[in-house]
Image 1 (cartoon, rainbow, N blue to C red):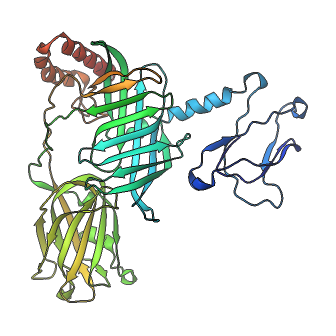
Image 2 (image 1 turned 90 degrees about the vertical axis):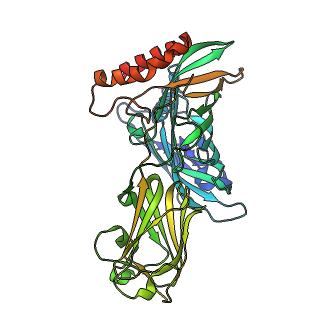
Image 3 (image 1 turned 135 degrees about the vertical axis):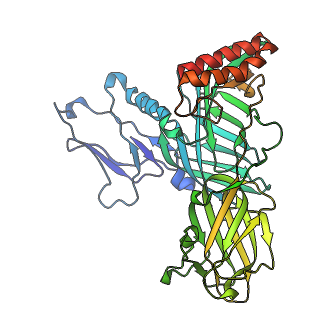
Length: 474
């Protein structure tokens, strides 16, 4: 029996006869919701077993207090008492796409604040085995960093993170979902690499690495982990567009429809003048019973807003915003001002005014913080719209590898570790477009790569491996 936390006492009966009475498992009171699993093994005398069905009862003794949190019950024959344990581990490893709800807390604070979901999948396929990470750290392209230690059963994690603006917080998570690959990675930024290990200057194939890490903020550029077998690895992803961030280009497009959540510091819900109205196209409005107010918007995916529009409401010009800031955040706890306005005035009702963002950057959350209106004790708007410029798809710069790093087995020496992206619809690597046959996409792959293979046989060998993996998955 696997119990989570400080379990209440329990009686265990088989076919009405006691196997154990008032059995208690030790717990970890300091980590109430995140305790390690406790495994208790009971041997069943053969004379208590009956032919056919047997009834196993696990219950609290009469008068006992406390919550019994039973995670699993397994039954093994006497000659193979670890069989079900191995089967459980195999099933868990198969559900290797893991999602956590997360929280952050400032140093010295006692209050945890909700943060963005964490989703990851790290799978090295080189020995036919899967090993989930025990420790994990990463860095985003915006300079944000995080490091976490995961509980043995992946029920939660504890760690720390540093936001792009330098603010440091404690960081913790609770398991929300586990799914199998590839179903659990649909719509997520999954990378697949054909990998090699370097020994004394000689590189040899070492299988495939599948890597996904999405914390709701900027894309990752470095990931390090230690798995349950003790293997440590660290990789730095290559840049497709050069050393600097890609510059937005083209006309901004309206991304208001990607807002999946909106919260207001106040709203007049008695008559339906709530924040949700700001995302519609009708002449409804949002009204707050305050001279200042905040509106928080959560996007479906991070985006760099370059333009935003505000539309005045139907009446009372004195309720119009006059001074405000537009702020962005990755985690909902630390906010960076990307645009600020003072002394703004709407000349008429239902007038839409457009503002260019002074310092655009990619964020998952945006806040419109209205600090002053035109003299009323209420604040209102009819509509808010967000626009983001298209980012051109840059032709990847071919290099010796699309990631570089090292890997070290438990107790062994580190060796070189590098990988070449396997193109396809599962990642952001150019490859087969949806709806096209492999035969149509292959000439594009060849045209993009063969011109660079003259750099040496080493590059040519990697290209052949990439093409083979691509055709296998086409």
